Image (cartoon, helix red, strand yellow):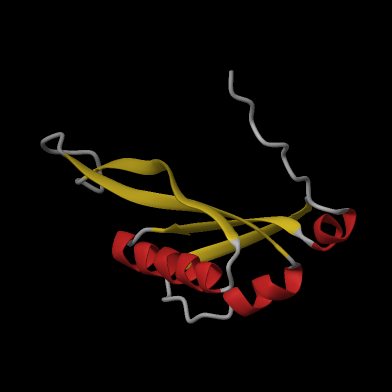
Length: 120
């Protein structure tokens, strides 16, 4: 019969300063989005933080169908347009000062970043 060693719980001081931080990145361009995600994760791991992600969220496909003819006369033909929005989620557990250092990277245009901070 084997027993597991006791689990060491962090002290109150360590948990009081750390926060759960969720970074949501969204873009229409997948390569730019993936570069931003790898840069953020690499910087977080250099700071020795706990990182989860990037988690791929379902792609939103926005579709618009319009008639080609401006007046409605003639053959009934349609144009179909779509825009795909890709989203990635990265979760961190760290102090808020460290997050400012991590997120100070150059992110390409077209990549939207949303940072949410919650107490751990």
